[in-house]
Length: 345
Image (cartoon, rainbow, N blue to C red; front, side, top):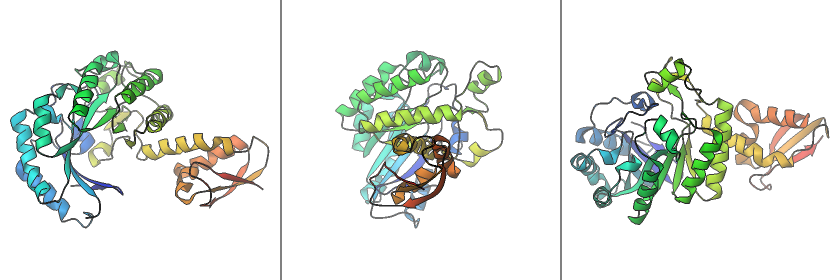
């Protein structure tokens, strides 16, 4: 059991890998991604997870708390199975331990009957596995739905008052940077409440792994994925759509040697993207190449990690960009977020 918390929201996840999925997508291996078995989730299992969560010292009373069904396609489980899972959570909502439920599902698994059921049982957020808004990319990835399904389900979710999240996957077969950024622009027009970015990686046991071995598929390099996700994040967040996750979560099964065969997986992928975005923002404040042989950097305290970058890659980038040695990075909270001050030494 894991508890994920932020300053405003705590999420207790319940994984239902592959359950309800009518298709096996070319890239998918959810047991290895989530570290959970494929066996059916039952009421006892849910009770054990939630009881463990509320007894945890990390279970605070001062933030919003939510139960989330991740993996699989929740609304494709069937009405009876959906009701069983929702009823198992309901007592914990009634007693005030949690305020709502979140589910993830497919864009073609949404209809009025299911939305009425979920709304009655306290589901507030629905995350759609959109992946792409390009129909050829969706076809090659064997998603089994089209971009039109995403448009229709988003409209229906908004009409019923749900908060909608979108999960997007750059680097799928047939994709490119231009195609994916067009996907992002189309998604923005749907006005989701949040987004996740999961660059495609090649996992052992998938059809994509066979494509990779036979040189039918080239995954994104890490640097490509960082740039594409960075540009996408800028587009989304400039329109008020927060990106709440970038890159797959680490799990023991995912980290096992031989599981990830290729692709832009990194344990700190989200931080790498945020550092790239910060570099793009502060570049205009740096001196030109050769203007000084030594410089010092001052930045707001909370942005110093972004200035330094992963394993000081940000400092190396600044030194290459300016041809000057960075003598120090110091705290200066009088500086606005997203800016730096440079001392020429």
